[in-house]
Length: 116
Image 1 (cartoon, one colour):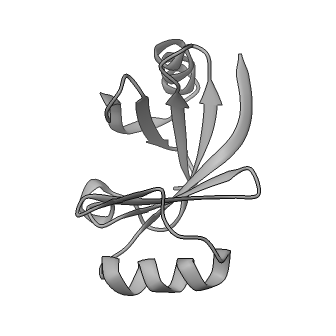
Image 2 (tube, helix red, strand yellow):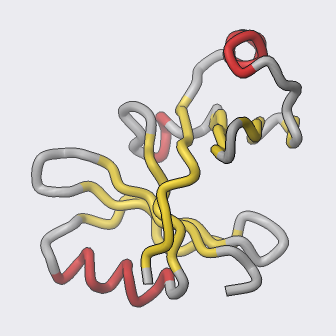
């Protein structure tokens, strides 16, 4: 089951500048602040900054759909014609992510929480 769209990841080139901008926009400090990822939580949304996103094919912000079975959803997207840009990856603590490109070049992310 696809639960909700609760996460968006921005590829960034200058993590410090992006962190300052999103701190000012969201009026919160990051909950995660690492050289490879900065994450904010605001109004029920998770907003992430990925300094390696461009190198992995991110051309702009990527919305991540929260799903119960990431491998099944990824297979369904592939069967529907999507191109996998990032296969299922554990990003820590059992949280899984993946993202694809659709026929129009739009990026669609998937995430599965460890409890699912």
